[in-house]
Image (cartoon, rainbow, N blue to C red; front, side):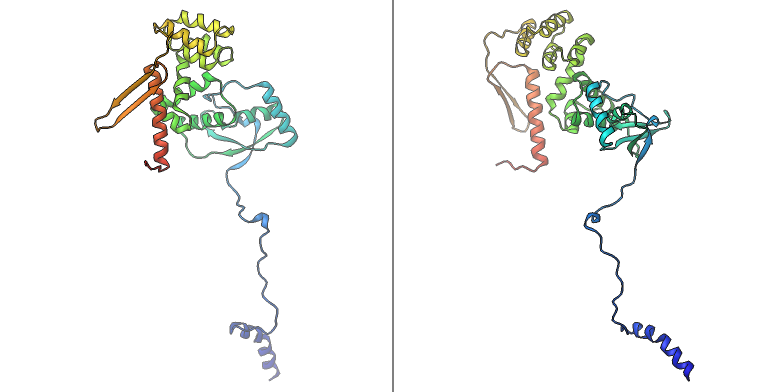
Length: 301
């Protein structure tokens, strides 16, 4: 009998708990609450560090010139405070290295600082050359400006790789269409004038005006005058118009109408005499604004 009582006493707690009752008043132990700092935190895959010699710049990166003073300042910052943002890299079977998608400036500064490793985000998805170039161009435009001709070459490469026109490049990069067309026009200049534009000896705006001339000798003559400070941008534009046989002594108004097959009429007007090239740029900018309003569902009142 005593043995039976001992057995029942041993299983009593289990029987009570199975019926929803507890003999003792102790509450069950619950999992600890998350600290406020941990709420919403999730580890992200794809991040890590690499030996610096395992990373190389993209041979087709649009940016080729880096300010040594800027790199030195960034290297000092990385040496003192560490690398604040990882670079983005992709693996190349052909090169046998990790190739930089974005962050070459940080990689150069890290090397200059003498650090053995660099923090990276490893991009494992396949990227076309056009997609890689687009990301590199966006990175450069948002962080530190490209040289004018470098920017022009990047735009032209995107057009060729993706079969885009200037308007499509502008929409993809969220820049004005006129910015794309003016920069691409620089590629019509001789290489020596392009170099002067990139070094800042001649402004990009003046270089754009010079690109309208077909006579290379006239381009170089006006480029010399612009570089010496004898011609402002407006004076360069006026000189170009004169050499193209266009009078500019008395500015006149421009007013054009373009009717469509569906009854619409598009008017273009200005308080000065313009060119069809300028009209084209105005229409491209207007079209970009119309598309922006469509995307944002702006109603016509």
